[in-house]
Amino acid sequence: MTPEVATILAKGITIFAMVGTAIGEGLVAAAFMNAVGRNPKVEDTLFSKMIVAIALCESTAIYAFVAFFILG
Amino acid sequence: MFSVGSSDVPIQPETLFSIGGFPFTNSHASGVLLTILLAVLALAIHLTFKKDKTPSKFQTFLEMFYELLAGFTAQITSNKKIAKKVLPLVGTLFIYIGISNVLLLLPGLTALKYDSITVFRTHTLDFNTTFGIATAMVVWMQVLSIAKLNPFGYIFKFIRLDAVYKGFRQGPGPGLLSIVDLFIGALDIVSEFAKIVSLSLRLFGNMYAGELLTSLVLSSFAIILPVPLILIFGLFSGLVQSIVFGSLTAANLSLVLKDE
Image 1 (cartoon, rainbow over the protein chains, first blue to last red):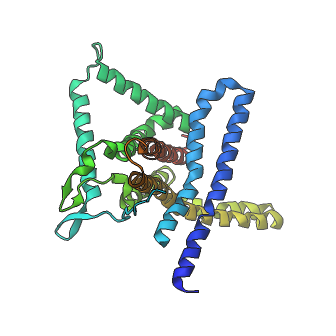
Image 2: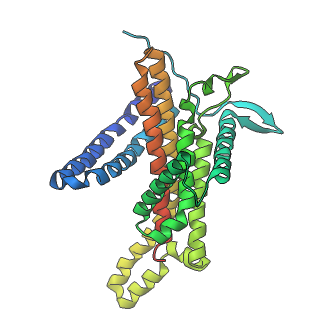
Image 3: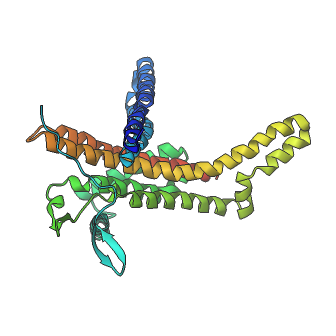
């Protein structure tokens, strides 16, 4: 296992961070849908908070993205 | 099918010239440009705003914007006194980071070249910038916390000997359970450093991802097709990331300044 092969394998494993991000953001969106379904009046106040929460969930995927480019 | 050009966005910004051994990079140049723009705006506000006559359209627009910032900060801190205290710093963060993320989407600014190096590069695309801002915010939080409790109270917030003492006074069982409080206090120290890293890396990573994907898309497609992608990755995510940075700083400051 030469260093180049190990680097490419490590870069491939770093991509796996996207799985957690997708699941987490799906949960946030599902909670938003449930809340709006029960009480449609809160849609305007909750929408911008949902965007901020999704940006926070995205942050660990962004760390993995930066690590991907540092490895290569 | 279509050839993707090699995208090359260096993580370290290129130096334009050196001032006595200190390199002046292109993100410094765009930082200077941004500061000059904001200073001109502040001067325009100071000279043309009237308090007792009918306000002009510019003044009304900026007052609406100020209401938006103040309302958003009050929502996050959920305490109007703390919001009033925190608003100058948090509002500056919103405006500074928001404008610097978005400024170089204006056409023409990246075409200026000096020795075949582009003169202006997005100010937050530089990890030094975001790390500096995040470190300054976290150090300011510690300073506020030391000012509120005295320095010994601040140190004993991390080394929870008082919780251990109270636990052992109740008996050996709760005493051993309160040893966990010591570990939680030590973990608080790590979480302060983690705040610096996460704040800076989130902002830098989002800007870097947007820049890289923009350069990939612009080298693969042409004419009109890149536009929606640039709007999403550049404009939208830049504004959202500035809101996230500002609101996280506001939330942390309100935790420090709680029960006032």
